[in-house]
Image 1 (tube, rainbow, N blue to C red):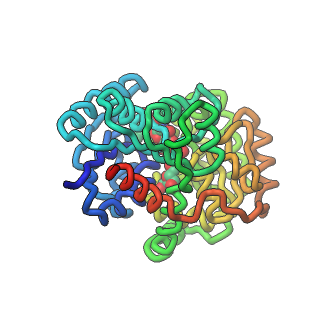
Image 2: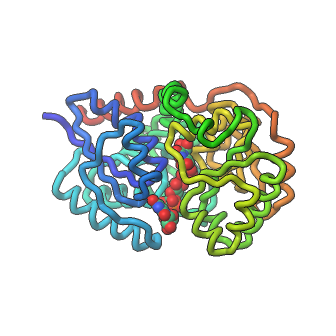
Length: 365
Ligand code: UD1
Ligand code: UDP
């Protein structure tokens, strides 16, 4: 009889991560996966577009939880996921990353004694003010199989007392996806033509992290920096809806729009094209920091710490303080044209295969 995995996801980067593993699971008849989409992200360009473009199997359950405060959002997900788990009785629950959808899936499963698989375990910013740090620490501590992208992430888990037998260094599933989708992006994306962009002639930026956007002082400082960068370079920003709302609320939108080329969030293949052809990437996203490195594009990260420490150590990524407008602008100028070391700390693009092999073994033991 085939074994059942219930995958819980709900936010943009999780759809992208799941595209690697979920399509692979479909080639293994001994494992049956059902997907729960919590509805944390729900706009077409934050959700459906990824399922269509990356061939992610359609979710069996859609919870329509939507945007709410952390407590309410997590609680509503928890309540609904528990009901599904009681009904489906999966052999494993699978979660990705560090969002509220991750934590809800892990909590619901742990209370029902369903073993949990955490993909992208072990990452730490050591900043407990980040909701993501709470989500990943708690998820890691209730998981039975922890798939980590790097040795650093494995060491983080061991230093927290997690049993080494549960921890597997497999590389980064996002690297699998980047390798797999690179040619498709070339073939299918026409974003450069559509946005009138020349390769190597523009800076790409994304900004959405709560600790940057929800603090008005930081948001103003970052907005001022973006304005100055946009006055000197062509600057394109596919803007996360959280940030769009906050810039408008703070009255910053109209002035910024004169210097910055804002567009709606784009599909993954369009994002790959924008990343690969940028002269520099400025971001506070975890995934975008790594993708800059995958495509050898220098990156400036508007945060005081990063979970992806290898990027900084190898010289591909520079952290800048969100409060310091001048530092952001000057670092951007210095980083254009810079290079880091050519090493590959995130595996070989085989993370999903390795994860599935270990899951299969676990389920058959
Ligand atoms: C969430 C994750 C974050 C991740 C990010 C990926 C948590 C705590 N945070 O942050 O780790 O990096 O997703 O993008 O889980 N909104 C829309 N349409 C949507 C989705 C969101 O308009 O489809 C707006 C709403 O105003 C909402 C706001 O964006 O309140 C924030 O959305 P939410 O999912 O709460 O957090 P993210 O900032 O997206
Ligand atoms: N991304 C995308 N379209 C966009 C912005 C980002 O497809 O308009 C992709 C990006 O290429 C990366 C992932 O979304 O694969 C990163 O997600 P996000 O920045 O929302 O979250 P984080 O990685 O910070 O959790």
